[in-house]
Image (cartoon, rainbow over all chains, first blue to last red; front, side, top):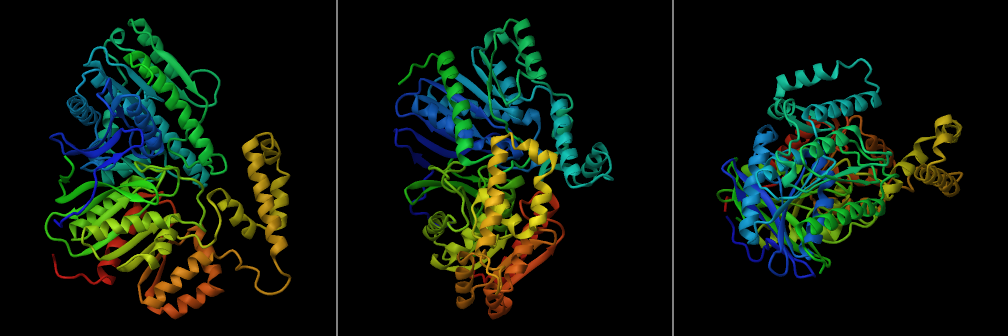
Length: 301
Length: 308
């Protein structure tokens, strides 16, 4: 390897916080992570569990904004990419729900070490909600904020298939084989199938068919459910999740952020200017920050 | 850990580096052993969600493939995207993010890599080409689906349609029920106004005689391409056979672009027959074809020093 003179792995923010990029060794491979360290001692820690593929790209800047904001408020925050995704080791075929949970647990442990606090909260988006809820369930008292959570793996797969259909129809693909047949064919040929150029491995598909979001002891956790979208009312799946949590002793908070996110589709550029995007990102970041500081007991600075 | 040896046998490490008042983030991918002295800058992004990973980790896969072959790669996030600081601002083809590419090249130089290949797609293809003349040690440039015009991100469709649609196309679509219904939505109203404005502007500027088609070809594309030809630096241009942007490129060849290409001879290689649409890399098959093409082309066109 060549000699390096001044390549930094840390970025200093104007507010005194800093972002440190590196890797957490998990036994399954190296997980890429960025940890945001507050200027003073960490009052609590937050682990941000990203979604994958298209959803990872679409949510990325929102997560960075949230992490920087929380670090400014005195919280240590880690973000990371599961094995087989993003900048981490491995291929998309390595992604499984159990694997994602193992990576989440490993980074949570590293964050606890770095921050010096075991008060840890979770923010997860879309598919990240599944591993996050699993790991949080093992840490009583840990709050859990879920943005547009995937409540059921099966319904998530159905959603992907709908995207596939929409794209096919837009391309005038009337005589295409059924989505299920096409996916089966791709899986047989390559071990994965692709939606909008993003691969989903066969192992993950199998996992999704039997995975649901589950918070083991809801009474032990503050839960925030955030729905994105202009539609009136909370969607059925999210209402059912909230009802289930309440029935089992929890008291979830539901918030709606009024912008639509096309998680897998191209957005009409006329409808999504940088200004609009910044405004919608700021809204969800504001709400989540307020909620986290409240439940973690972190005062305003 | 601030660096890691991946299961594929290449090393990666993150890097933060300065660029024009911002701090950019990138990932350096290197061979485990001595490299071949050539670096590849993977300039990706431009869309507000298109961070340096690119679609389906295309940039990650490219970097790891190339590093396994001895190349040192750097993929990075533009200012305002991914892990980098700053605000993205407006995307306009007249103002590609040249400073960011230059700053990334400086990282390569700090690593002791003097010979560089610049690779980018769409807006980033234009960034790669714009930055190439000012970066020391550029040995080749790869541009996937470079737009030829000089419009902004929000105007891309309006600009293209103003050239491709006739007035009767506009009128036919304007009176559709769907269009009229959409007028109630502010975002659509804004878009329709933009479409009309571009068409009217084009008509106002178009002379009654002479070649009306080439005003939209960006000098910011032509000038650096000409510089590459003058310096004898090979350039690869890649389109799919169904790429909408290929039509722009073909039409532009009637003017100065054609002259530059003629003068460049084999230096500017245009591959325009990848099956389907390359723009956006919306298919895994097209991603893999592009990846193979880019790796093979770099191997063929960029002389490699002895391993060091």
